[in-house]
Length: 378
Ligand SMILES: Cc1cc2nc3c(=O)[nH]c(=O)nc-3n(C[C@H](O)[C@H](O)[C@H](O)COP(=O)(O)O)c2cc1C
Image (cartoon, rainbow, N blue to C red; front, side, top):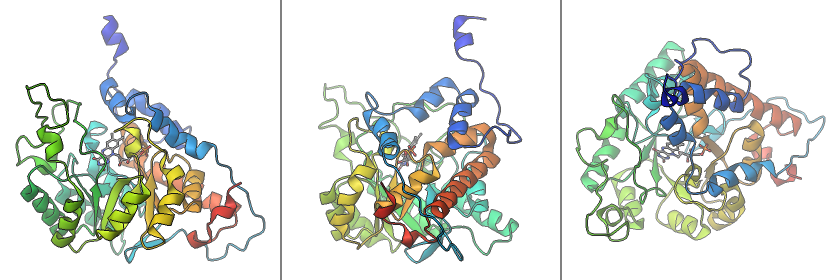
C-alpha cells in the first residue's frame, strides 16, 4: 500500500444499528471522520482562516454556566414553540446544509425522514442534492406512515441567484411544493464554492441552469471587488423584492449587527437567524450568542430571533434561549449523524439533543420556553 492510500482509507459504510457507545453529539462527531472521505470531512468541519470564528462559536457556550433550581412544579411541561403561527415541537431545527449526499447515498431523504419522525423542522438548502419537491413529498409520506396529522413545518433556504428570474422560480417552486417558511441567507454571497463535488452529487435544484453554480473568475487581475460574483450579490433591495414576491414568512439568516437587524425588520423580515455561518465565511467574527442581547434590543421583541453556530448540547440550547433566542439550529451534527448511521443516526442525534434540553429544563425548573430567562445563567 502506498503512503497516500494509507493516509486515505476508504470511508466506512454507514452503520445499520446504533452502537451503545454513541451517546452524545460529540460521539457522532468523533465517529464521523471514519465514514467520510478525507476531503469531505475537511470541507464539513473547517472554518474560515485561522478558525477564530469557529472556535468562538463553541467558547461562547463553554464559558457560560447555569444555576439549577430545585423542586419546581413541572406538571404539563412542554418545549413547544410557535413561530409564525406554526407549531414546532422543540426549539431545535436542522440548519440548511448543502449536499447531504456527500455524507450518505440517500442524502436529504434520510435526513427529512429522521426529522419528520422526531417532529423536527429541517431547513432545506437551495444547494440540496435531492430536488426540493422530492424532499417535501418525502416529509408528507413519512408523516402518513408514522400516522402523524402532518409533517413538521417545512422551511426552504434561499440563495439568491445571479439571475433574479431563477430566484423567483425557486421561490415559486418552494411555495408549490408546500414549504411554509422562506429563509434568505445573506452572509455567504461573496464566498466562492472552492470545493469540487464528487460524481453523483449535484445541486439538484439548480440543474436546469447550467453555470450558475460555477465560479466565474475573471482573467483581468481582479480578485473579488468588481467581479461578477460580487456585482450580482443580493442587497437590501432584494429583501424588499422578495417581500413583494411571496406571502411566506421571510427569515433573514446570517446577521450579527444590531443595525442590520433594525434594517431587516424595517424591510419586512419576519424573523432573523443570528449566525456567522458556522464560522465558515469570514474569520474573526463575533460569536452569535455574544451579539444576541444587542440584537434583541435592536428588534425590541418585534420579531423572533433564532441562532446557530456551535450548538452541541441541550444546555447550549438553554443558554441561547436564556439570552433571548426563540429557537436554535444545528448544522454539522446532522451531517456527522448522517454519515455514521443515515436516517437512524440523525433521528438518534435529534433525540439526544431533545432529551438533553428537556433534562436541562427540568433541572433549572423551567416547564416552558417562556419560563426560560437570563436568571438561569450564573
Ligand atoms: C457543510 C456545510 C454546508 C452548509 N451549507 C449551507 C447552505 O447551503 N445554506 C446556508 O444558509 N447555510 C449553510 N451552512 C451553514 C449552516 O446553515 C449553519 O449556519 C452552521 O452550520 C451552524 O453552525 P454549526 O455547524 O456549528 O451548527 C452550511 C454549513 C456547513 C457546515
